[in-house]
Image (cartoon, rainbow, N blue to C red; front, side, top):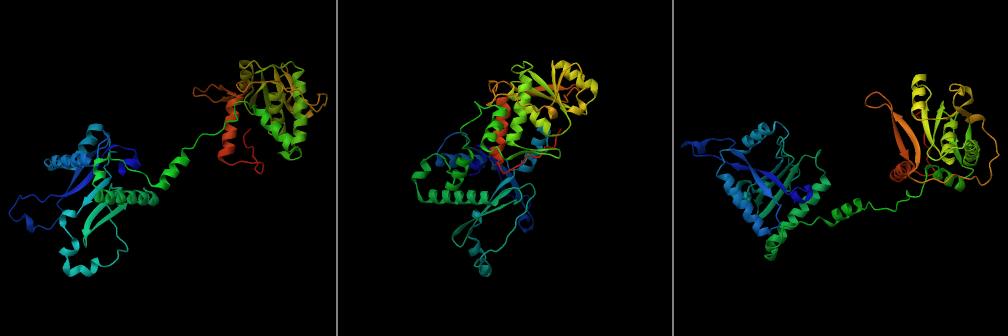
Length: 397
């Protein structure tokens, strides 16, 4: 059961063993804890029957008992020293008290205690995650699991315990099962949870979509819905696309081509959205620049990317006179044809380039395709259940 839930087929159990050695004639008169810990190897790598598994574990246990003077504590210490780490644990304990016989029969004077229903019990041992305790009480097998509740989920432990008890009952009532392979079936509820969790197949809509096509489609569905809310101006989808097509028409007059980088340098505002969409509609890819960056850095980025067109705002359009500069806030002509002729692009074409600080201190440009960014957006919408009832709060520049 541990192997099934942990997906680990080779591990060790900690076995507490009573080890009062006959080192003195009066040793039996000493009251104390003579417990020794034995690490018992469990290997489920090979497919064998329950009967063969039992024989293997029993043989391993007898072999370990012959070396009981070298206990589990010494073994773990040596492992830590060998591997130069203190992160070695054997946190799963199998405590067996069956060899003590029926506890009720051995405590006749206290039978009234064993006739009561247990209400609360606790067992705390350092570095133990789960302690399996089995004893015989009133001709019945009592199996208790104590565990660290902040580490292991109660629901999971209940499923494991039920599966373990069910397996014991089946083995006790069926001789044929002992000749079958050591296969543990998960509870039906657990199987359903794992099946549902691994149902990751879905119909992808990314292949034929472009970044701006998502906005255009929404504008067709809800033209009168608010697309942008800002302190300067609010735009419906119809108003937004009118400005986008107007600017895109102006860009097409500049003979823009597919994957051409067009720089966007603005203060925060609605113009940024118009500029990005218009660049994509015209067939280009946008390069966002931080208006607060040093002038020399901006010049370096513009030169490195061979930018010739700059989209900006009217109050800062004269910063780079050698570029074709278009102020987005004043570009409102309606000379474009309806419907607007959108330049054909491929999902693998460039959507934008964004510069990072770079590990060396020198900014590095990251090229993002339409396919990549659309995949991210659709995935986030699906995961977070984003719909037309939600808004995106634009914080970054």
